[in-house]
Amino acid sequence: MNEKPWKFLGLSFDHMHQGDLLRLVHEHPRAEIAGIYHRETGPMEETIAKFNIPRERVYTDLEACLRETGANVAMLCPTTGAHAELAEAVAPHGLHLLIEKPFAANLGDADRITAAMKDTGKELLINWPLRWVASHVTAKRLLDEGVIGEPNGLHYYNGNRGPLRHGADKIEKEPGVKADSWWYQKDKAGGSLLDYLGYGTTLGTWYLNGKAPIEVCCMVDEPEGLEVDEHSLTAARYDFGLACFETRWGTFSDPWLHQPQPKTGFVIAGTRGTLASYDYEKTIRLQTEDCPEGREVPVDELPFEESNAIAYYIHCLENGRRPEGPLSPEIARIGQQIVDTAYASAREKRTLPLFT
Image (cartoon, rainbow, N blue to C red; front, top):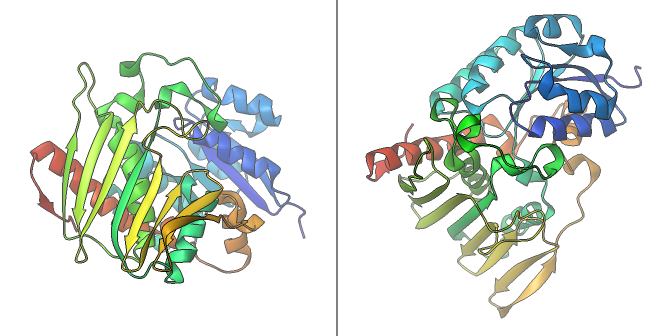
């Protein structure tokens, strides 16, 4: 057997997470970087040097990259608005597909991606990096064990100082001009809502075992001189009650360095208790009927195959498992439904029934 049977392509470097994903491929004992593609070489140079990628594996021609590299998994990191177009270009080549969050710019594009992959016999995984945070995985275990009863309320808050302040592996950068970046361009699906709301709605749907809301209301800021939001507030009404989702570019600190206030993460209420699962923290705050004053619960130690997207995807592919939970198109689509409804609600300034 080939020592490294999983050959990955890194397609597009518009999203800085491509560098993170390629590092995980580089470090995995059964995977290798078969090729990388971007429409120009400049954004790839740092990665080429970091992982010593041979020049013959570097492409500015997408079709040549797909045709010549012998890869079996493609990782997509284009602008959010280009997810569907790139997925449709990849699908006929018979590769498994990993799309870096968010799923798509809108529900129609999400369905285009699913349709493109439907008859290929290959797997589709939507990677939400918060899925690999031990506190959030532990929270799901506690919910499934019924520790706080049936969930009847959810609050999510997340964001960072802004997408121009860091690159791959969260290395700090001097921010450029906002209006010059795709992150701040409406036609590229920029903005904090489309960047971060899907985290909350998709993992939230996972926590709620696939439940979808009935209606959604959203408000966004309108920063002077920008086309997109930097702050959004979304309320969703479910059959059990309400959930709130807040996104923010411009937190006082980045949560992977120092938790801002409010803390980023999830607070979930249930019929017999509550839990708070914050990003990157080592404990979960748990209230239960026998401990209403609350206590700190250590987070679970995750096995290697649950530690990151590449380890998980290879484990699934080698064991005939489909990606599950927020990584699956089914759960991610519900998250996208909420995002789309929120986006339209903010534009129309009214509450809307959940888009289908």
